[in-house]
Length: 636
Image: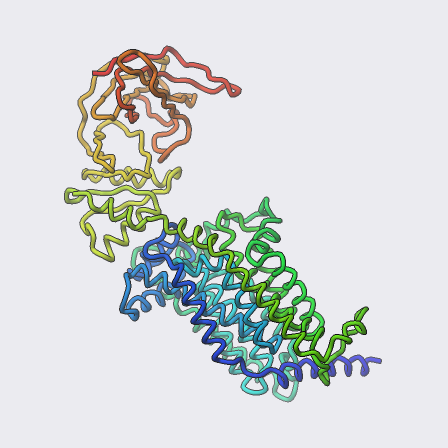
């Protein structure tokens, strides 16, 4: 019995190998080239024209200056992108970096075509599978702006294709494994989530006939040598990480700090945890990318692979489960970007549904297992009709091509990531800054301004500091800028409204200018609360500055300050309350006010303001509870 079972397994393995080697022709190069060109033209049509927002702005800056991006650093992307900007002789630097995403995206589409072709031996379904990926809205968007995910998708597709090529190869198989190890190392020097592919890769190698070591004489030494070669090829792919070490160690950081907080991205551990929207990740997002018909085709393709090419089914299935599981436990707002490998695998499955079409309409293939499921006799009646098979494949291609309907969605997403940030940056840098001035801007705008300043030389003398609103680190950045003694210009997106005494506010459109010079004001010394005094008020242009002073012990209650505005006839014309939130969160909340130090509270008064009423209140069970007496002030 045991020998019979072993014989069956060997027969099945040889059958699969014959299917792979004997029936798969080399992928038609002209179709692959045409697909690359068509996809690239499509992405050029929707390509962002210049600087973009968010992480893309930072990547454009670090690529142009050969710096290091946020963790995990993306050294391969940085170094390759920097060389790319030197090789392309036309277009702005920002546009060239956007173009790189389009090239990576088109390359990933071609590899998906190659994967499906190797699985099905049919060019039309291979094109359909490639189109499912190319026209999915998230992938389309990320191939039209500067981001790391198009290259990540290219590496996922390349590794999967090379593994299938290794499976199908009749000679030089170990050389292909060395190439796979090198490419996989390179992929990890770009995006850490390539680790999710490792279990599927290992399982695939063990399942493919000839993948396990042949235990002949000297097999241990031979296996050791080969593992050493594979390890060296893998480590060679990791060499771009040297750029991160050189960059950060030259700036005083330790090796441990670089490894833990940059390369491994230790800060991202706080995002790990089960998401509250699993159906969105597992169903809504895939449906939005491929459509319902695309998902049905993907399910059919997976079923056919399980039936006919089990090792490929394991490779793609385990890779899908690993990426889906990661996305379910990664609580970040931009989770659609991380689902690109899922969309890619679903696209491959959708193209592989041609396997079922071949069974429905193809001729009997000698040496291939015939369908044994219920209804196989009915199915066999359809065989022998090549025209029917072709018609079904064209239907699949049309379904994939209908994904062009995603164009408005992709364009809207690209516009959102662009956000006219370059024009905003140029407008801000048009201001006549005095020497040594510092601009404080939100993170998105600061990246654009730094790019224009350091790469294009616009206002090269002005210093730029970025802050993330609502984070204490932003307040530290502001304090350092103020302590420099030079003028500080706060960009419009940064709603700075509180400062300690010793600084003066001045309207300098579009900025709020702050400089270290005591301002003249009207002294009031009006007690509002036993521990809070309105020490004075200052009004010029449309700026209103209230001067708060905590007397005695620190405040135990987080008050909300408010100002009611009145015109010359005593009619209310506006109101503004400041509670716990807010803005840059510097010198918030009032419990952080140090006793004996004046805190300046900035308001922008409506036109026609002649008088104000100022006070404090707290919220108790959702109800406003006034603290002390309000103060009415007639403005000069």
